[in-house]
Structure formats: structure tokens, C-alpha cells
Length: 404
Image (cartoon, rainbow, N blue to C red):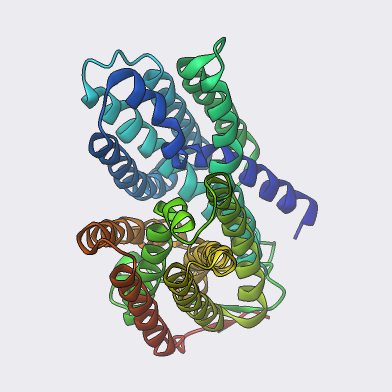
């Protein structure tokens, strides 16, 4: 195993995902569209839902394209689509929001989905002995995008001599360049001369086809667990500022807590990856479940008692627990279902993002209906508790092959 080469690929993949994750900075990027074109919050929310839908479809399409035309051409296609989506959005006239849905939601969402899935699955193949660490670093880059690129975008959009159109145009060009460079540099993992995987004699899981994976009870259990945990994280992140204000934080500190939450989210991805590599999948999932339950209880207590310190602690814990979800997803599929069909299997598992978004939407409705945080957080804590119970029932298949 060439350590220099694989760590180069990890760095390149992380930078590429840092830029690709810009699509998640929608809460920042949508502001000038609402101001200039008068598009409403529900209309702009539909765009993000559409983006996530085509992101998931892009992951599946990307895995199929990789098999047919190879990694490099597939990533070049993703670079073209991702860049084109942002560039076309910069030229919107505001006459029809359907053009936003097409450019940002469909084209960009599809391109980012193709890139995301292929970069993670390819780089992780070079880290069979450290798949948790690899997944954590890659996903930290992706999660940090909203904070890093989003902050820069907010400043350039507000600048009188630059504006939102040039910001979107610049993001599109940067996305194309970075993903194109990634396509040229990144290489598919190749086994050594003996046809064995260079993973230091670790146990190699049987390679499951998509059909075999879908028949596995473990797949559906893990899908439910990650969906519930991600729904908890999505819900809290979407109302983090409101929770902070309700707990007694000043306006400026409430805004700052959103950034702190993002930092904890990124740290959580790496910490989770390290725990995964040392203690295995099931213990890592239990850690994430317990962390989410604790986060829900702490935040609910903070709101009820107007406790600033508990609110800060709770939001930090949410960031850490939510960061576990993508890392566990990426590492779980490799650990339980093998590497041969990892690309396609992982893209299908990522449909949990859509399911989690739907639950988060229901939570938003409960919040509006109840007029307080007690009922929504009782539901969140219950979901995390159910996730813990399901996790305890997950057992590794007894079909592993020992690699000498």
C-alpha cells in the first residue's frame, strides 16, 4: 500500500467535497433570490427538497456510470453538471422559479450526487484498514462547506462591487475546476500482485450485490437507525437559532451558535470515524444513538429552564451526534456488505437523506402546531431511543473471509 498516494487522494477528495458541499449552503445562497425575485420561503424550500432528491438519484446514476465508462469520465460529467447548475442560476431573470428548480435543483443536485458518491467510495477503497477515519475526514470536508464556502459567499453577495450573480458564477467555475482536477488525479483502487486487498490481514466481508443487500435485515435496521438519527439532527439544525433565542441567548450569540454547531458537526465526523476503526460498527452506532438521546434531553431541559449553558452544551452534542450519521453510513456499507458493489450499495443507502428530510418536515409541522418545543423534542428523543433498540439487535453476518 502506497501511503503517500492514498493520503494524496484523501486530501484531493476532501478538497473536492469541500466545494461540492456548497450546495448545502442553501440557507445562505437563497437570500438574494428571495430579495430580488420575491420568491417565498415555501417555494425556495421546494428547491432544496428537489436538490436533495436529485442528489440521491445522482449517487445511483454515478455508480452505474462508473461501471460503464469509468471513474474519470464520470467525475468529469459531474464537474460539468455541478458547475453548469450554478452558472445557469447566476443568469436567472426571476420570471419563472421553475428555471431555478431546473438549474440548481436538478442539474446541480444531480452533478453533486454523482461526485459525492464516487469520491467517497473511491477514496475509501484505499483505506480498507482505516475506512472510518477516511470517511470521517472526507465528510468533515463536505460538512464544513456551509461554514467555509457559505461564509465567503455571504460576504461576496453582500459586496456592492460583486453581488450574488458573480458569486454564483464564481462558485460554478470553481466547482468545475476542482471536480475536474479531482477527476484527473483520483485513481481507482487496484489490488496487489497477489490479488489480495492490502488491508493488513483484516477480515474481508463477503461482497453483496444490491439485491442481496436489500434482502438483508441488517440493511433495513441500519437504514432505520441512520434515518432516525439524521432526522433528529436535521430538525435541530434547522431551528438552532430559534432554540438559542428561546433559551436566553442574545441575537449575536444565537447566530454564532449555528456556526459552532457546524464546527462540532465536522469534528463529530472525524471522532466517529476513529471510534469506528477502534471499536467497530455496532459500538459506534450505540455511541451515536446515546449521544443523540442525551442531546435531545439536554436541549429540551435548556428550553424549559431557559438555561444558556445547557443550550450551548446541547447544540454542541447535536453537532457531534449528527456528524456520526454520514460517517457511519459510509463505513457501515463497506463493513457489512463488502467493497465490490460498494458504490451502488452506498448510493442506495443514502436514500436515508430523503426519509430523514420527510421526518424533519413533520417535526416542523409539530412545532408550529404545538407552539412549543416539548412535543417535537419528545418525538425526537423517542426516535433516538428506538434507534438504540434497533442497533442493539444488529448482528454481523457470519460470512467473512480471512485475508492472509
